[in-house]
Length: 234
Ligand SMILES: [Fe+2]
Image (tube, rainbow, N blue to C red; front, side):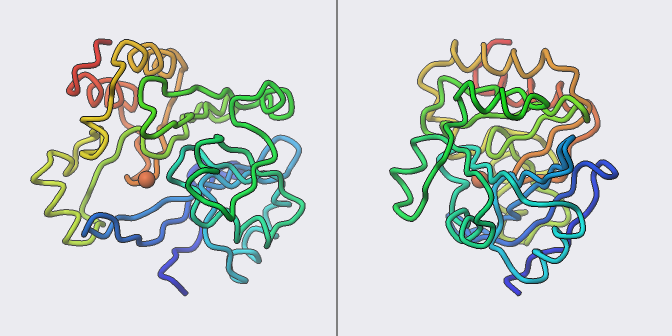
C-alpha cells in the first residue's frame, strides 16, 4: 500500500528506517521515517509514516510506540493519522507545525526541558537561523546518530528519474547539499553556523535525514561542506 517499504535495520536492535514516495515540486522524492528503540524498549517514530496494519505489525514485534516526533514544520503530514493509530504515544514537535496542520496536536514542544528529561538518550539540537524549516536535529547518544529531516538531502541511484534529473541540475546528485528551496531562506547565517557547529561537535557516526540514503561515510564532513556552500562559515 502507498509504496511504503518494509523496515530496514540501520543499527541492530536500535534503529530502522522505511521509505515511501512523495511528490514535491514536480519531482518524486523518497521520504524517510526512522524508528528508534529506546533503552526502555519503547519506540520513537521520527517523521511518523502513514500507519498501516502491516507496519503496525512490524512495529509491534519491536516494541510499543510511545513517541511520535515531528522534526520541523514540514514533516507532520501523517502524524495525526499515526496519533490516532497509536493513541498511547506522545506527540513531540514544534509549535510552527501546528499552524500548518489543523489536525495536528502536540503534547510536548521539541525544545521543552521535559523532552530532554523524559528521553535523556537524545539531545535536541535546534537549527537556528532557518525559520523556514524550524528544524530540530536529534543526537542519539547510544548509537552516535544524528537524526534530522531537511537539514541536508542527497539524491542517488535509487531515486525516481524526476528527482535524479532535478538533483543533477541543482548539485544534489550523489552529493550532500542543503535543499534548493532552503538555500535562499537562511536569514541568519551566524545562528545557522552556531547550530551546525553544535551538531558537528557530537561524535556522530552516521546522519539520517528525510531524503537521502543513510549517510555513514564522513557524515560530519558532508554536513559541514553542505552548509559551507551556502555561505555558512564553520
Ligand atoms: Fe522534507
